[in-house]
Length: 234
Image 1: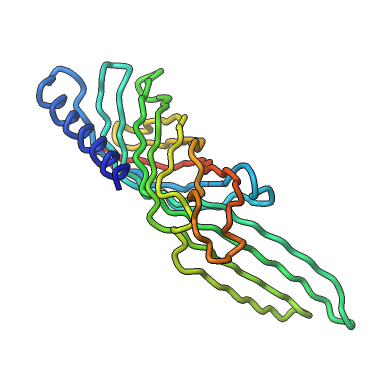
Image 2: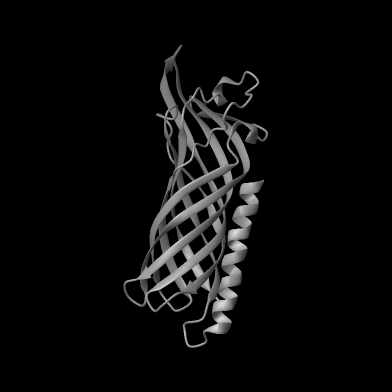
C-alpha cells in the first residue's frame, strides 16, 4: 500500500508540476496531455520459466508531456498493462488406426497499473528517444489452461481458468524502459518501448497451499515487455 501511495504521489506531483510549468512559462512549448494504446509482447525471465514463450496483451492509458527545453521533456504516464507468459506443447500420431493431434497451452496473466516516468530527447522536431523507470502495481493474476484434441478431423477443446492468484506474486514491480517515438502529425504518433524488469515477481515466503505449479522454490523471475502502439496529444 505504501508503494502504491508513493506511485500515485509521484504522478500527482508530476501533473501538478505540469500545470505550474504551463502557466508560469508561456514562452515555452505548452504542456500536452494525451492518451495512448497498443500491445504488450511480454515474457518472464530466469529460473523456472525456461519453456515459457511470449504472450500478447493490451496496454493503454494517459500521459502528460512536460517540456524542459526545446530538446528535452519529461513524460509521466498511468497505464493499464497486461503481462505474463505462455507455455505451449503439441503431439500427434496414430492410435488404433485413428489419427490424432493434441495441443495444449498454459497462460499466466499478470495485469498491472504501471507508472512510467520517461525522460525524452528530441533528435529532430518529430523524432525522440526516451528512457526512465517504470513502477507497476499488480491488480490481477490468473492462470488459464487450454487443450485441443483433433481425432480424425473432429475437434474437442477444453479450457479452465483459475481464480485470482495474486497471493503468490509480489504486488510491486519495477523496471527500466528504453524507447523511441515519431510524431506523424503534431497530435498523432507511434511509439515503441522495451521495459526490462528489475524486481522479482514472486512473493517471498508465500503460502501456496500445496499448489506446486505456483511454488517459486527460491527462483527469481522478472517481467520483460516490448510495448508498441499509438498516441494522441490533445
